[in-house]
Each structure stands twice: as structure tokens, then as C-alpha cells.
Image 1: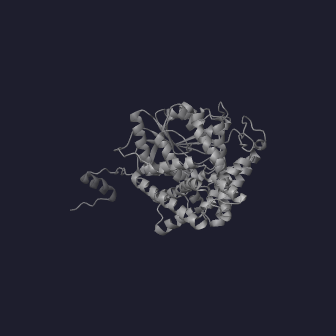
Image 2 (image 1 turned 180 degrees about the vertical axis):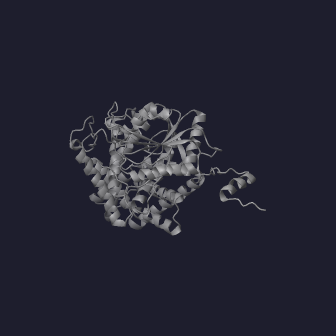
Image 3 (image 1 turned 30 degrees about the vertical axis):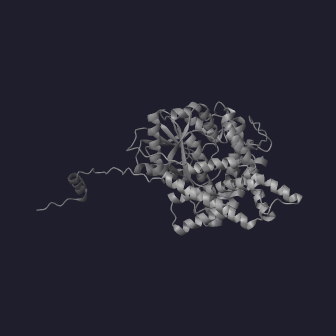
Length: 533
């Protein structure tokens, strides 16, 4: 007589007969990033095609019969030299595009090193933060390449982060002050350096509150750690950040932020191949061993609290530490409103100006950023001249035209390469991808205007309001969604100003910023800025 097995009895019998474990191990497979060779070939095609298209377009628009004879025409032509100012940055970027390399995959299996995924947040964007934390748990469950913890550093304990054995919540006390009086995110990061229970030999991956990880990032992180532990160099890792999260909700700003991904393949790829930080540091996607992070810390005072990542990176470079490329994608979110986009660029510009003035490193480490900031501060003039010249119609002299076309080619290609990377990781089909590329190209004048407004705002604004970008915006139709994002951002500013009226003071303690570069550095000690990172 046949014995009928219940479902609960059947599973162990089958697994015993087939010699399979009752709970199969996850398949250790990571979606690979595109090969370095394919990226370089596509970059080359994009550069050559854009360069030729610029010349064809200019021949159709302008008359190149020689130098203008009237005084205004000659002066206007001479002003075209402003187009050629970023030529060095463009050359470095194009070199980065054409010399991009990714590490070869040599790792055969998991590593034993502990990896800590560290989020630092004010805690206001709670839904976004919880989704980012969950992305870590989900991806690590699929690809357990190393033991891990998720460490969340906030100023408040009144936030529900979920319940997971691998989650640690570090709360910065309201009365905590660093020796140098650092503020905002730098204050929270320095508290974590001093008080986190993470062991010295653990590796920390710094993330923003909206950062999502991918399987390629997990594998690339494991590869980088294994190589650095074997060599003993313990270099600091950075890599490619994509911005396609919620892209359908704010498509134009997603296209505008594709320039950041493109720059990762260009100037940042160049500096990572060199091993030194020439053009700055990301605030997220920083892979560093715990004891290396502690060598410098994040206490750079109020002046170093606007772009604490760049201060920290240059301080590490001066100590002899070097950086490297980590193969893998981190996915983040573009600003949801043009207002937030402009304020983000303003913060970066002001922070890097303070870095060039006050970073505690030798001039040779700051010089590339000094040059870059000077050119950046004139970018709005270049944009203004470009728009005006569409109506004036005077062509640039041939040498200037060549340099300007190199600059414009790099600028356009940075958007296109960035958009291509985002579409590779998050495919959209042929027709929708074509639409994304069309948006990227057609609206470049709009993106350039936003970038220019951020710089101008930084040059002329003495606004001391505390701008916090809210990302907990419900999905709703076009205008309503934009209005909701703007209102949330304004409400956050008003709330902070009401709670901390001392922020209205015009006297800024500890900062002697030049006129026109006034930086808000006297907040309540219990706050750190999680501005549009």
C-alpha cells in the first residue's frame, strides 16, 4: 500500500533524494556593468558625432567670411573667448571618456570583511530613507557577498526605520559639539566616527538618504575590498552614480542631472585612474575602511560643513591616501523642482569656494579646484553670451571656435553619456529611450540656464534661510506634484526658521566669507543639513 506523504513531509524527502539543501543558497550572480571597451567605443562615436554636428550647425547659422569691420562686431567677436575658458576641464573630461577602464573581475566568491552601509539623514524624508534601507536588505539577500550592517545616523530617535537584525540606529545628541564646531552633516559624520561601534577593520560605504544599491555595486565593493586588503594600500573607492529613480515623475530634471553621471565617466574617471582627487569628491558612494576614515574625521569647522566630503577628500590626499574606481552602480534621485536644483548648485558652488579659501591643505591640492571655481563662476556669462549670439549672429575667430567646439562637444557628450548609462541600467525600450535622448539634447539650453542661475544665486545671495529638500512627495499628476514638492520644501524652511530664530542673524560666527559669498553657518547645533545631495 502506498504511503501518502503530507506536503510538509514531502519536501525533506525530495531534498534528501536529490541531495539538495532544504533551503537553496542564493545564486551569487551580479548584473554586470557594460565592458570598458564598449563604453569607450560608444563615447568615441558620441564625441566625434557631436563635434561634426556642431560645425555643420554653425556653418548653417553663421557667416564665416572674416572678422567684423564695425567696432561692436569686433568687440563682440573678442568676447567669444569666454567660450574657450573651460578648455582644460573639457580636455581632461574627454581623456576620461576615452581612457575609461573598469577592474577585471577576479573574485570567485564571498569575502569575510564586514561592510557597513552608512546613511546620514535628518530623518525628515522618512519614507525615502526606509526605502533605501530596504533596498540594501533586499539586494544583500540576493547577493550575500559579505557580512553587512546598515547604520543610520540621525539627530532624532523619533523615526521608524523598521526592524531588522542588521540595522543599527545612531542618534546624535542635541548637545553634541565637535571640537572645531562643525555643523550639519559633517557634525553627524564626525559623531559616527567617534562613537560608532563599527570595528576599525570594517569597510564603510557612505550613502545619501535616497541612495539605492545594486547587485553590481555589491560585487564591485567586494572586489575592491579584496584588492585593497591584499595590497595593503587601503585606497578610497568611488564610482558611478545614476539618477533614474522616479525619473518619470520629473523627466526634465532627471535629464539635467544626467550630466553628473556623465562626469563620473569623464573627469572623475580620469582622476580615479590618476589616484588623486583633482576635481572634488562625491558626498555619497565613498568606500573607505573605518580606521582610514578616522585618520582625518569630518571636523573641519563651520567653513568645512557645506561640502564636508570635498574637505575630507583633500585632507586624505594630503596625508598620502589615494583613491580608486569601484565598478558598480549606485542609484539616486534627481531634485524634484527647479528651485531645489538651483539651490543644490548654489550650495556646491559656495562650499567649493570655501574649500579653496580655507581647506587645511597645501595650495597644490586646491589649485585644480581654484581654477575650476573661477571658470564655474563665469559659466553664467558663457551661457548668456551663447543665447545673445543666437540673435547677434557674429561667429567666433577660428582658434576660439575650435576650442569652443571642444568645450561644447564635451558638455553635450556629458549629458548624452550620462543618459545612456541610466538607460542601460533602467531600459525604456527603443521609442521611449529615443524620447529620453531627445529631451536631453533639446533642453540643454534650459539645463545650462539652471546651472548658471545656481552660480549667480551663490554670487549675489545673502539668504540665510535653512533649505531642506523634501523627497517624501506623493505621486500625483504633473503640476500638483510639483506644487506639493515646492510647498513641502517651503514648509520645511519656515518651520526651521520659526524654531531657530537665531538663524536670521546677519553675523556669522567663525566665517569671513567674501562679499557675495555669504554662507549660512550658524544653525542650531542639533541640526545638520541634508540638502539636495
